[in-house]
Image 1 (cartoon, rainbow over the protein chains, first blue to last red):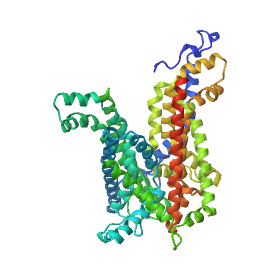
Image 2 (image 1 turned 90 degrees about the vertical axis):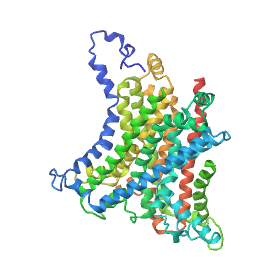
Image 3 (image 1 turned 30 degrees about the vertical axis):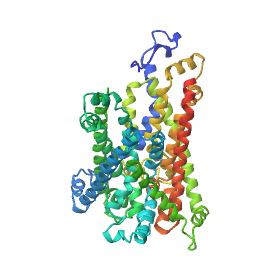
Image 4 (image 1 turned 180 degrees about the vertical axis):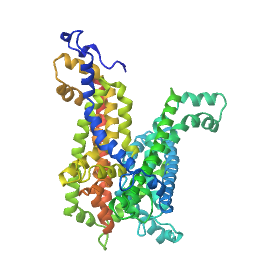
Length: 303
Length: 253
């Protein structure tokens, strides 16, 4: 990619040397104005205004009171449950997704498995939200297929164990449905980057399969795996629709709390809502920053 | 082994949902729930509304992203990291936070009261969907543009006397058609059942309708989940079809 922003071909010859450089470069900037205007109006300003609101009281004066209120027990526990669900579904999804991708790419399975897995992952990672919660209610709800089959044929009452689809475990299981395929999609390029020569070199030096994975493949894949898991974490942390349709407001997680706050059901404190939103951005922002940093490390390592 | 467990985990909920959706009639399996859902005026209205929203989102998104990505590639490559960063922001900032910002910034007493009446709110909802679609659209279209020689094509068209609009419409668009289409179908899949934005902006979209039915009915939600799954599947399938058709065409181009 040439770095000089403009080449002589775009200056009409009759303009001559006297034409000021400013004009074409100003015109160049004009071409990206719609995009930046759109991003400013519908992405950056709305987010910025919330961040400012988080540090203001109802009269617009500066305060740290809203941030302090985030550390109240009820709100802190909402963040904690959100953190647990997101972490559990990210770790589980990351591990299972990685194993699935490894099996499909390097497991010596029939050739049709990989494209099938990829297509299905594309579908399943987008099959989130309300329909997904319906599907899990039909599967593991009180009248769900698996619940009923277990009760009728295995004489095992799932719900007597304290299990509920509306609980932490239920929500995590549901989130895994889109987390696992997402992991497959993100981590596949990294696995493709493992060269066959490395394994051959390891084997010719007498290294076992375990040695290959422990000393070669894992150290190379590690930043990609960790980074992808962070992305899954952020993905789960911001999800509203699935949890809302599944549990209503019975499970106290941050996105649901914020949703209820915006609808005006609870809290009744607009500025506390802004602080809640700021907290969410901080959490998802940090995990995404971690993802980007780890990905650039992984790319550098590959070159 | 991993594949077998994975297959069971992913197929079981679909089978269970399908089985459940057939049980509306007490005396055996039937498609009664589908009949009820499809003939519900609420379904038709909200599905139509969301389809229209998705189409508008795709058109506006393409008109916004293609010229920008093209211009960045041709004239301002220095800006690429910044633009890429901005297009990834909707994945970082949760949708619920973005829409909360809209409600604060564009409320009825604000300088730009976009939530003031229904048409303006529809516009705001469409913009919110374009925002959500940015990461998918930009990545898909940018990859498409990188695969062709934008500079040579542009210079060839310029030397033939083409104007900027006709370069974009007649030279660039057709060459990245498959990238645009795959971004468009992904956008469709994301927008059609979207809940958070539509619900909090109070518009009659398919997502809030799904939630309403889920809270009040027994068998219809399963039928709706199957329909939603088929729509997602169709969108992804079409992406595959266009991607496959594009590859040989690019080689001969």
